[in-house]
Image 1 (tube, rainbow, N blue to C red):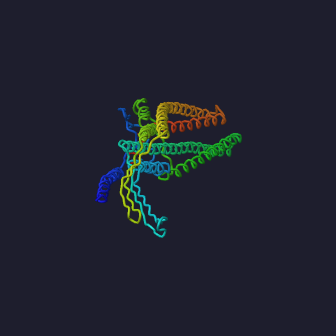
Image 2: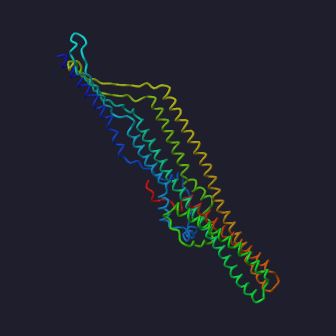
Length: 455
């Protein structure tokens, strides 16, 4: 009767323990299947007046590559692929955190024992089986899910930052190619003009209407123009190679499109600065990282109360003469290590928070410099355009004076050289102004924004 009562009590204990183990396993499956999605771009917390890029972008569409090929090129760079893989890693890490750090453990201990007492030849088959699982205390699972969500958000923002940096690189490469093409075009025009001038002067020399000295001066100027053209063509080839190797998805035409006159930014400068700062990914990454570290610090603080382990143990000894079943409860006691880990996580959260503040300061300064640079380069282009027109007018007068015999060929060639240099400076200033204006739009996410990037 007592044996029957013993087994009845053990069965009752098993009835209590198995639901505990089942309950410990139940919440593991649900969070694993739930997708964790976060937006790629940082949310704008306060209303921001968005400039309407109408005139500037309409002009840029004439000389920029198609938006579809740009988005394809950005997506297929190694840097963006790496950031996308990091986002997948963060999502899987978040699922692991949601599932919890504990697994169900099964311990099996079969033994073969010999009796060394009255009957040394007697052997017993014995076994011991234990199944156990640590139970995550209330509140820890929510902190784990929150920490994983912050990690995914930071990784998504890093993906957006990689796309943004790639767009910057593409803009710089494309405008560099257009700049070298413009310089090469000016050098080509200068060389062709001198070739025609030399042919005309050679005919006059044959007729005795020009001096050999004038032909020598033309030859010297033509040699310099040819050298300038070769250098410009080499720069074009190098820039084209850079563009096609880094962004093979972007079609590069055989001849570069002409750059129109640059136009000012649409909207107020401060609106652009505000938009650049609010759309910046680096700030969002550091803010999400700080939030993650703070959550991890609260999680480490909660870990000062360790998770207990609950198990069910059954055994057979003395060749099945002794059998038993029971509940196993393990409770760790936290010490100085857990306290130090919690304090370290709080310190890491402070580091990330201060880094986010520093990043916001730096991004604000860079945004102000970018907008100011766009305004200044536009003014510099206007000055270069006026200088080009002034030299063109002076060259027309010098040519007329040369035809009238008032000046010599050397003076006229000097005027030709100055006018060519002024035209070249205007082309460079025009490209610089366009690049600075478009850089502001790229930083403000109004140009080449990856709107179709999956969250």
